[in-house]
Amino acid sequence: MPTVVEETRILGMPDDDYMNHEQLAFFRRRLLQEQWQVEERLHEVRHSMVANERGGDELDHASYEEALRMQLRQADRETRLLANIAAALKRIEAGEFGYCEETGEPIGIARLLFRPTARLCLEAKQRQEQKEHHYAKVRR
Image (cartoon, rainbow, N blue to C red; front, top):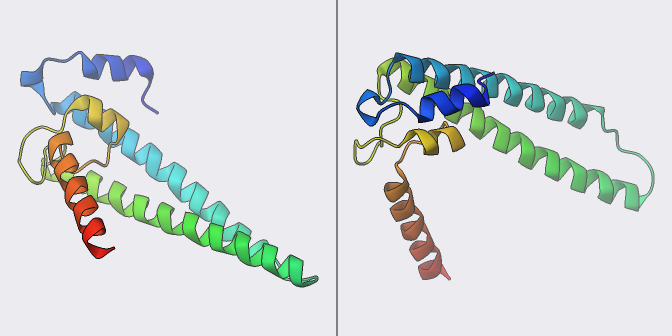
């Protein structure tokens, strides 16, 4: 697992050395570690869903249904995150990691440390969210 010392080193590299071999290796390790962790959590959720048996009165059934609904939501989130991690790993292999899919500009090390699966730079992400917010208002 990448360490705080490695993060600090990566953050301290000059901008003109953006997405060099060391940075790409760092993010690849981090994404692979996160992938393993997500797969473990997903396995636990699936195991928990199978292990929960129905039984008892109506209150037990309602409790079971609510727990199952939450587990399904978690499994959905974990599955989407796995797809995003796989896509980020492919971008590393293709030499496209760290660059905004919309503008082609660098996403930035700080943003990638926070969200290594990011596809958009901060400005493009903000524009996307503003559009989504606008469309949500229009639909109401």
